Image (cartoon, rainbow, N blue to C red):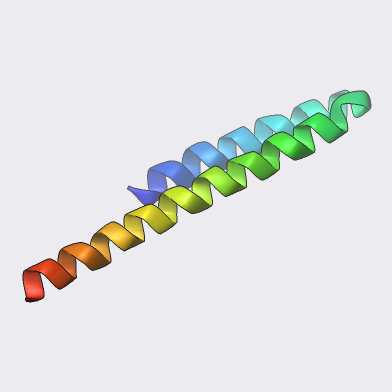
Length: 61
């Protein structure tokens, strides 16, 4: 599951980078978009990890 997020996040970052190199004026917007993608991806991964740990704890008890 995390790999899906990583791939989609990476392609989004690549597109944002291409756009920012073409249009220097929108560089700041793209930087903010990229940061929000990292934050969204990070929270998704953390949520998955918490779910896995909770699942292990419940099975173990």
